[in-house]
Length: 100
Image (tube, rainbow, N blue to C red; front, side, top):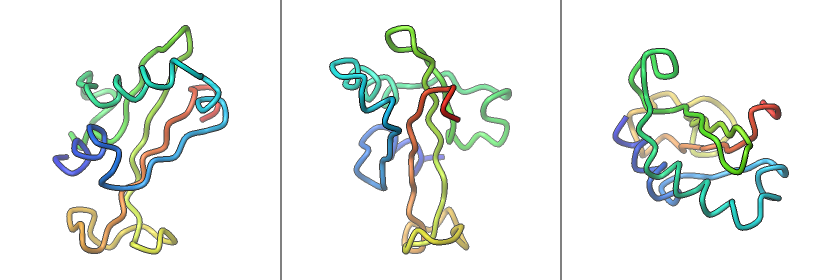
């Protein structure tokens, strides 16, 4: 959870990807990044394991999702130990809900 929060707040402690739709937001893209950084609307419905690895919110009338996945350092397979940053690359994907 702490490592996921670090990624959301900095977007530099892992890999950040976004769909073409989100990239086309223009000026609102900055607002989306800021919203992800301060996002705290985690509840059992969207975060049942309390990992802070998924969220949704609205920007400019668009529902946006973010999802964090845990991959090996080569980003080919799931990480063998997501709690170990030495073997895990965190990848946050930012997308419109309809692109999911």
